[in-house]
Length: 250
Ligand SMILES: [Zn+2]
Image 1 (cartoon, rainbow, N blue to C red):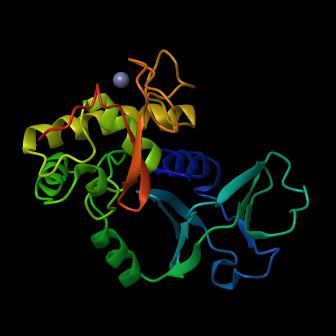
Image 2: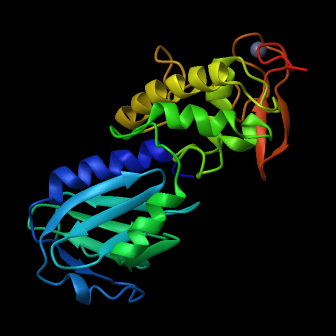
């Protein structure tokens, strides 16, 4: 599933390629009406958590959420015919991006954009993220920290892989309840640092020396100490943790 680091990577790349231009929008699949965007200049592509917002002149924002299986294909030759099932193609004379299998691809009026922003917690990859607010929101949760970090209204952009790896790096049992402000701060600082590495690398990076390896996520044994990784359902997703490196807090 695309987590915040990939959404920010898409936004950065597409903003550089498309902003300031008048991209041609089409829906080869026919399930999106590009009419409102015909001939409109694209001002900016913005990422917020797992959401993408395309800001056009004189049109509602275009809101994209990739969900579990959505992705973009980039074509250096924009004349390449789209394959079947492309919901949206954004094209200039230099490049085309094909959006496949999103759960959202829709015009979003200003009040919808406001409501979306208001629904999301601080995003560790946004320059305007309020770290104190992020700490306050996580420390205010009464539930397990491993469920809270997946809640997009607490922090925006963390998915299951980052949950597993960030909690490992923090030495925190995902079942820990009521993380205090110091713990929340440490976890936020890790999120800011590692999600940026992940955005730049295009994958989850939890060990800069071994960027293709994970500590516990989808592993049978902990990569640090070798004991079997614990797996259980937490926040409707499978949690992964090392019982040695992430000892139970209570
Ligand atoms: Zn371990």
